[in-house]
Length: 414
Image (cartoon, rainbow, N blue to C red):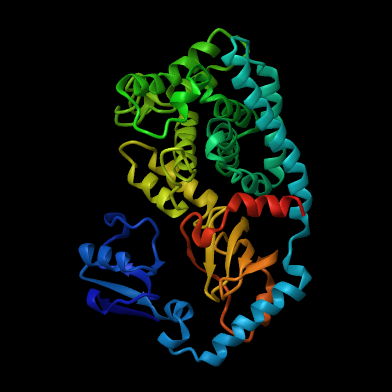
């Protein structure tokens, strides 16, 4: 049921399904959302006089003491979760484990290649382009069949290894995005090679500058900005590299309104491949811990990207990217409406609101000895006598001191 609510009548747990104005005229990223923080109420107060609330969705998210759902029914739902994650085998997707083993080999070899390439170039050697193409080809083959395992491994982020890991992650995310966009295998090979090598110019910049935690000096900042041209210059003489790949390396920091670098290109001067890599580069950078900043929550990063459109980034591609990785991207720390906490392990392509979640904390925030897998899209939930189990909200990175990297290692080594 949809009801009108004045702003001063709003409270946490209510699901906003409509505003008093078109969604595109608001600053909210998603059309329809649950109010989970006081700051969201304040934001609504600034932009709207009234909103419309979906009472059914709101009730499902409210704590039993704040809603019309009985505590008995709510507790039945909690008990059902604790039972099902321990005793129902069909909620764990066995194919994911097999995909993960294959993905680990491909991911490791790609990271070894890019780390080696940076070292060779730092020492004045030449780049092995054929090995780069082989690495991209292997990634494409795996991603075309099932992208989830590589997306999962792309969360293995260390701030001290940022430059090389970032290149691998941008390549994986760009290929997953390209797959979603329907690019051909030939196009994916071009996109993937450009995404893997886009930051190769940083091999000419010292670690002292790359890993500096303080503010860069003016000269250091100019040197960092020069990495795109340095990378282009290193690859330009190689006749085995497509011009579209060179365009990505040179122009991934250009922006549609001309405020980017190195040549202040605008609009159609920036290719579609480069626009794709620019979006993915920004997203992975924002959601990674850096030597000078902590990672953004995924939804925060998506909102930042959305706010950069259409002036700086391609709005159509950003909307497609959000659809591709989902509202709850792989690697996100999430809280269920039962109080359990977990990490999104795998997306359900038919319904990205119902992913496979690896539970790490029970509803008392106590750690499980072993990761418990919960498939929110499984038909088994239809047997529940309590409320439907679903994601309540996405949490900040490192919430409850959860280290996603450690969770990934625990799963991949099990």
